[in-house]
View 1 (spheres, rainbow, N blue to C red):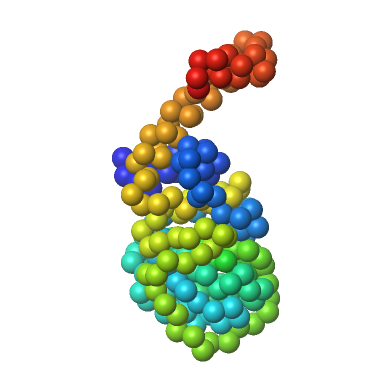
View 2: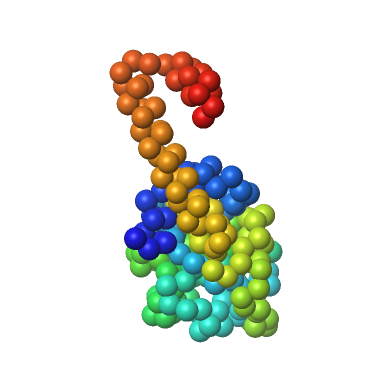
Length: 204
């Protein structure tokens, strides 16, 4: 099973808790449309607030199967919309994570392209800064490198450091197994306080 398949088997919350690392982005970073699911390796973009030229260039630089991860300083502009979505899909890009604004939510949902952004905005952008690619960027308060695994769902977004993903998946698998056992016992009539006290006593 490849990395993306293992990641898709877990929620962002489970991966965050299993990691033991500061991997959870700010809760202000949310999906542009309901039900979006983001999962793939990051291709990082350092842009500028109110300017989307870097995103146009990033589409040409990013390898197929990657998620564009863009830092535009949280600016409230519509940096991304339907036209860039169509262009990105044609190049095999599978999603966008942007610390800034995006627009055209209805059209983007119809295209099935996951976008996670800090805000929705219809303010227009200029095209002056060509951007920097492949450098570490800060999105939602977390530093992300190209190749890190980005996972987003209804609960939020995590960015898992590439060297740690297998360890995190193993811990997430164990956590899911543990939680299934807890829920089984709850359905048998046990209380949450009783169960958690027992697990604490067992050193879990």
